[in-house]
Image (cartoon, rainbow over the protein chains, first blue to last red):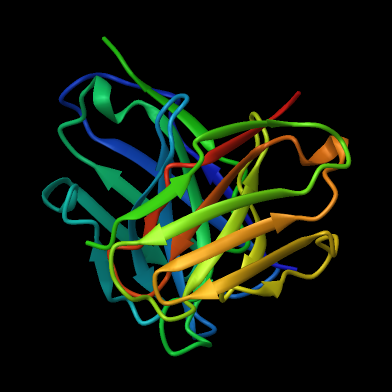
Length: 123
Length: 107
């Protein structure tokens, strides 16, 4: 079955760019019909959807973060990545990657999820 | 954006209790509503999709209902492993949004 795994630095300095990668195993990221998402959770808080990259390469970002977010895909490595620029302490969170589909004609549901990775923004 | 409002934000219940959590959308989302369970330090786990479909491997004591703007997650007989935080999520339109969560604690 498809599994996702996040990786990247756990500590980022303020004003720098947060970079994370999600490695997909058990299936091809370019096989079609799926959205590859980033979601974050501030400590002790709820879930916030960041954005997705579609298997075709098209992207959509949450307007609340739009100007700072870039999601890209590397099909040769079966990975997709998140870059969040100009970070502040408010970007400290656990970052998850997750897959959803389009079988319903809309977005489907997030499954599977990666285990999550904590990123702390601090000098 | 579609706002998702869960209630209650927390509840205390005993093993064997019937538990109901509600989720309200700020506009009609048909049945594009999913439920997740999250335990401390773990990623959310899909329980229910498209309002009432039980994810494979999820115990049948979990059920979902609703359509339009009002949805319910029911645990028919609470088990020790069900103490967790539950989130609803709308998949009708982007940006995809989650409810604020309901923490189910031991009474």
